[in-house]
Length: 338
Ligand SMILES: [Zn+2]
Image (cartoon, rainbow, N blue to C red; front, side):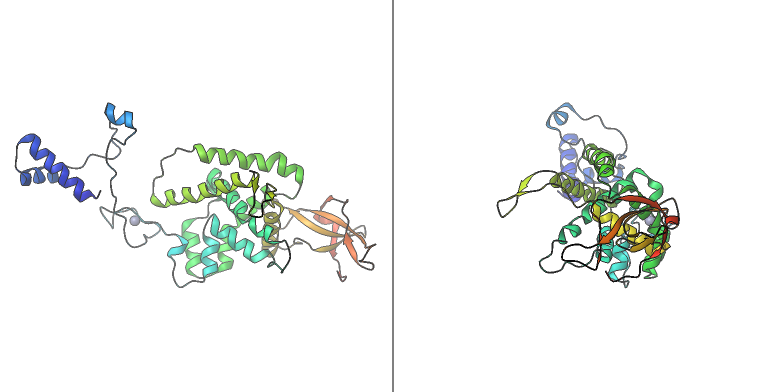
């Protein structure tokens, strides 16, 4: 029902109750200010029993143009603010806007940049599927640690300048926190990271904070979808071929993307780099450990050993070796043909 219809009905009821004309009732209603939304209303018993809201929903006008960053609402009386969002910047590249949009856009962009495209008949589309996991991690980190949220003004400036590198700089604290949280070590994933995400999922489901703006309500909806995806991932289900689908998600993948992204910005050895250690052993890097700032402080490596089967003459990663070495123990990149 529109406000106009509600208004007419209220006028009709008032006219009937007070025995005045419809026009007089309309005039009187228009003169009475609407009750303050924040004023607490005691719901009458009937409404409380049926679970109805005490007042009908109200429509709030929102300003049509995007507000300036420091807008306090005085320039558009009677309308709510419309803070800038990445999709409001026109005439910039799609990937720049996407890299600035949290949580889903940025996760998609990082995956697009660092996950190699799927080859025909290969299985690596499973890694692309983990994009939602990265988005959930972004959502959790920005929710629990507001200091990691990128500043709206800086982000807007970077997007308006159509500068992908600047967007990455603004997002760096968040990316770094995500890279430090995610892991490729099974014990850490199952013992710490997964329970933490599970706890966040439970929190989102019981979260009854009132959203203050419609953008916030939108964002909550996106996070809710991610949590649904999280729950689906851990539920056994039958796929369309009739087989049981193994529950889970390829949780190692986003760690590799974030390592590559931060290595691009700060140097170091990315995912899959072949290096020689100071003691002469060849090795392959499979994860980086990050501190508060700068290049990686340590690497998780696997030793490279001569292939013995169909890969004679090549160095292949050992399945059993798994080591954490500090960055001083890495002498440099290995110049061999993989
Ligand atoms: Zn405003």
